[in-house]
Image (tube, rainbow, N blue to C red):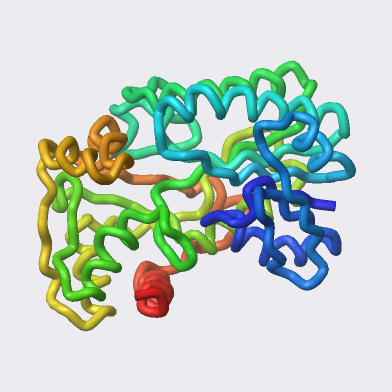
Length: 310
């Protein structure tokens, strides 16, 4: 049995499609889980109830945590640490291996132009401080040998079946609707993105490779050093429109936050869009020999997805 906690999200959904390559029993855990494969076991839970989390873990060989909580610093500070503690305790109790899907918020600002698994952890944001704490919690128990776990880390997303992608929500969707792409930060800076099906494929592979545990992995991500402007040009070309752009100034986030609460949460993360952002996944590629999807191919799938929704 392999279990996904957060099975309906941007990574949980494609991960569920990958796991039948490795196991004939997949348990999908969320508030309202839906089958991805005909044989999936559905396990609805309230993540605020520790006993339900433990029951979801019971009997699992591998537990993947791909859940996402509301993008709000207060929610992250109050929900993430106790939730992860319960999951870790359940994994230890039931002898389950833990695969934690993570982002790059905990890395020091100076590391963003070239991030590796060895990059310094010194978060410049409150959300980064939460992610650093989660990293510390896992690796502490790995080091004292009470937990077998790995962290699969991703750059910013792009791809189909996700509403968590800046390239999708503020660029692709707008261009399809005949609007201008909205840009955060400096569009002349390099920004690498992870294709969500690649992230899921890598996470499933790592979770089923015993010697991959007890360390951090960057999931395979394009090595094409494209600027934000070049990403927009490729998306516009696939949509069949001119790459018209509207740059959002910082002051606008406060104004928009009056109507769209998530906009209040973005300013502290803007540093990632104001410098080169290069996510190095060469460790994974050397170990497994699997190249990342080319941006043109990934963009085509993303545009097709958004066209089907608009």
